[in-house]
Length: 262
Image 1: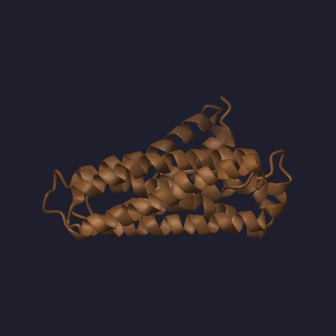
Image 2: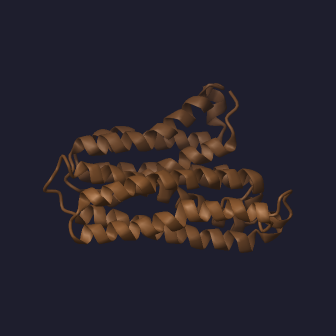
């Protein structure tokens, strides 16, 4: 089965983003079920990636650096989803995140962005920040719902995750701007230059839908949490999750057109 590189990147971005968000929540007393569900959610894209790669034969998998990183990443799943000790669970999060991030960096190694060390590093950070936004908003929305089952859970946990997610959005905006500057020649040499009307339409949609509106929603969530209103915050996060997923899809579409994570 042919598995496009962008699909690999998407799986690794989601895994990294969800793991980073989960680490920000840890060790909140939300119960083992929460960590099991969200840990499984983070690992599922990696299992899918591993299954597709293994369909070509295990011998071929061992010769693929990205596939090997994914294989090593999923080894942390037993402790990530079922670890009884918070420290061992956190260690599994770090282990899985690092191997997933390395796999993501290697998957970007064959793109036009990787022609220089600076470009490769910038592309990797941009992809990681995109995943952090998607994983952070989605997990924050789930955590908001969790307050219905754990009413006495401190609001601080959701406030902290919302702050980290907002910072990831700001970082993603800055990295996107840096990418436009660094990869200007590549972006302008494409069939549809990025700064042409049609290119600007897609870029503007990516910015507004995927980053600016969710950032405004993050500020609204912050305001709701000042009053301890987790239900309103959860509703806002639900809308933000939809926008962020659309923005992530647009980012991959732009990368497919220009060869650079945007």
